[in-house]
Image (cartoon, rainbow, N blue to C red; front, side):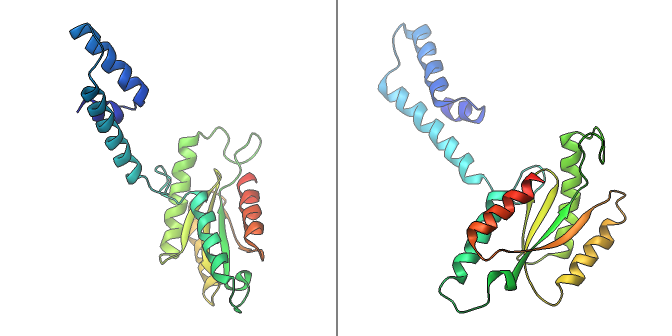
Amino acid sequence: MAGRLLARDGASLDEALELLSRTTHLVTGGEPAFVDVRALSMAWSESTLAYLHQLSCEDPLTGLASLAHIRSRLSELYRGQLGRRSADLGETHALVVVELPDDRPGRGARGEDQFSRALRLTRLGEVVRTVFNGTETIGRSGTNRVVVVVERDARLGRRVALIRTMLATTGHPTRVWIEGLPPTDAGAASLLDELCRH
């Protein structure tokens, strides 16, 4: 029980064992028994594993998929193209990028804190999810962009236009565009890196 509580409080295993040792020394004057060390370690590890199993690939603040998840999704798509004589991935898929204005000094929303920016990014994600409500992967790219992995189809242009229309009412200038995918997975990694930096 103590191991579980200590793990939930964020104590490392080393800290938990040190506390057990101190407590045992105060109560008995000696070192803890192996059975006590084992019980504490087992409870601590079970609690830690339960926490890890509940982790998601979503950013807990915005609810958007992590950049690592977007990267994994693109890698899956590129692997799916290998060995097929189908169209290049750049012809079948694209990224839709939605960007908040830059808030560096002298640009955009001056003095905006990270929490306020995350809330704006969350609202941006909600608008994007309204339009892309299927199996598309919607994630965060850096601090000011939402990226959507989409299939290229006849509706893509209309959907991007709808996002622009919906965002026009927010009062924050927002840029929306379709980014073509490069021919290779390595190229996609570079593209994502570029989208995070600018």
